[in-house]
Image (cartoon, rainbow over all chains, first blue to last red; front, top):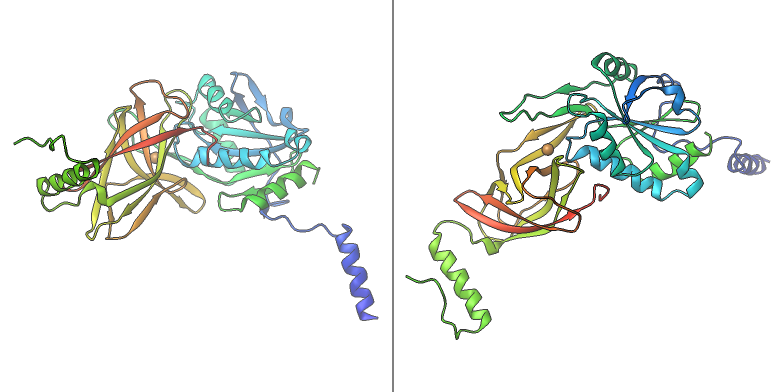
Length: 192
Length: 154
Ligand SMILES: [Cu+2]
C-alpha cells in the first residue's frame, strides 16, 4: 500500500503537479516587480511597462568595464544561444549603465550591438539610478579618478530575471553552472 | 662584441647559442624561455573601450619570478587588475606585482586577474595578433602574441 502511494506521488510529481525547483536563486516574492524610468540607447525616455510581454534580464553595469561585465554578457549570450529560437526570442537583456557620465546613448548602442539584438542599453540620472538600485537592494559607486580621468565603477554582478509580466523570479550569478542558467531561462521563457 | 652567431651554425645550435648569450647577459635573472605563456587572448570591446587580456603563465624555471606589469605597442596604457567580489558587489583592484614560485602557474581569466588595455594606438579587429610585453622583476621582458577575440568570447 505504502509503495503504491509513493509511486502515485512520484508519477504526479513528474507529471508536473509540483514544479521542480529553480536551479538558480529563486527570488519570487522577495523582490518587487520590474519598475523604472530610464533613458534608452536611442536617447528616448522609457519605463518598465514598455518591456513587458517578454522575459527580462536586468543587469547593472558600465561599458568601461573590461573584465566582469562582458564576461556576464557573454555568458548570457551563450545561454540564450543554447535555447531554441522561440524561447530565445522571448528573452531581452536590459543593460543598465550606472555610469551615465561616460555612457551616452551612442556608446551604449554600440556596446550592446556588439553582443546581440537581445541586449538593450539603458541609463538615467543619479536619482533614477539610485531609485532602481535601491529597489533591488544593490549598490554602486565610483572609484578614485586617475591622472587621465579613468575610474572604476563598483556594481552588483548578479542578473535579476523577471517573467513576461515583470514579476521577479530569479537572481543569476556568474558562479551558476551554464546548464542551470539555460534550464531556468527556458522555463522562464515558457511563462513560469 | 657581436652577438650574431656564425652563419654556418645549424638552426638548433643557433637557438641554444642565443639562450646561452641571454643567460650570461642577464646574470641573476631567469631566462625568458623558462616562462611559458599559453592561451593569450585579448577580448575587444567596441570603440576605444578598454580591452581585457587573459593568459596562463607558468614558471618552468627553478627560481621564483615576479610579474610586474605589461605594455603593448597597440595600446597607450596597460595595467594589471584583479576583479574582486564583496557581498555581491564587484570592483577592480590594481595589482602592482605577482610572485610565481618555481613551477607555479597563474591564470589571468575572466572574473579574476586580467590585463586592462586602454587607448588604442591603431584600429584593432577580431583575430588580429597583438604584441604584448610582460614585465618581470630584474628588467626582464617576455614578448607574447595575443589573439584578439570577440566581446562574446568567454
Ligand atoms: Cu580592470
